[in-house]
Every structure is written in structure tokens, then in C-alpha cells.
Amino acid sequence: MNAKQSLSSISANQDLWVEQFRQEMFERDFRSGLSAAKEEGRSEAKLEAARNMLIDKLGTLEQIARCTDLPLETVQHLAEELHTKA
Image (cartoon, rainbow, N blue to C red):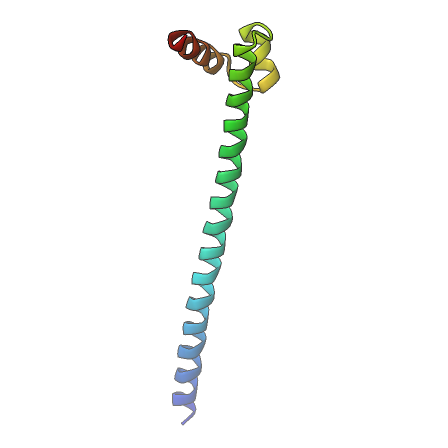
């Protein structure tokens, strides 16, 4: 009788553990997705600021890169895109 109860208890605990593990994985993935979305939003905001600064000619490429915390190569690429569209 004790063996059956122990086996039943272990099985129930294992099922509970698996369900808890799944929930924790879901929550971790959800938080990770939110973090990635926030970072993507910040990156888009930096790019938009750099575009606006380039359009308004508010500094050199180096100054815009420094002010927006973007790599100089990225700002150069944006400048080329804007020049091509004009």
C-alpha cells in the first residue's frame, strides 16, 4: 500500500513540477519578448532621430552618430539613403 501511495505521490509531484516548469518557461519567454520589443523600439527611435537630424542638417555625421549613440556607419548609410531619395 505504501508503495502505491509513494508512486502516486511521485507521479503527482512530477506532473505538478512539469506544469510549473512549463509556466516558468512561458513567463521567461514572454519577458524576453517584451525586452526585445522595447530594445527594438529604442533602436527605431534612434534611427528616426538620426534621420531627422540629417534632414535638418543638424551637424556632421560624426556629431549625429555621437548624439544618437548610433555607429557612424549606420548614420552614413542613412545619409546615403536620404541622398538617394532626394
